Length: 102
View 1 (cartoon, rainbow, N blue to C red):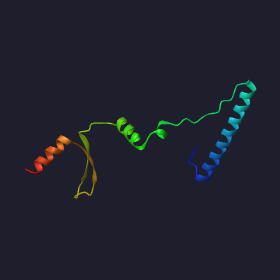
View 2: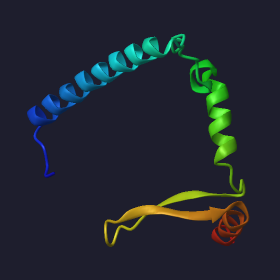
View 3: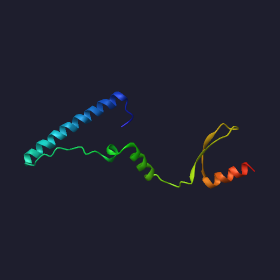
View 4: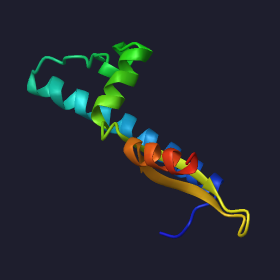
């Protein structure tokens, strides 16, 4: 299937949503025929919905924790106009500051 424009996408989305409703209704009917009790689906809050902002930040930081002595330093070249970031350690930064001031 090629690229769809927005209108085609919206029509296809609606068709699929309608099909989902049809299938859910059919599923309910079949369960009734089998005599199974229908248990409604209850939305259980996820961890992200129940955590405070600070708890989310702490979780993110714990998942992506790396070396705390290494960080990014921004650089800019006046000659080329390019800019970027490079990794640098606290030890290397201390050395560079020492050399610059001697």
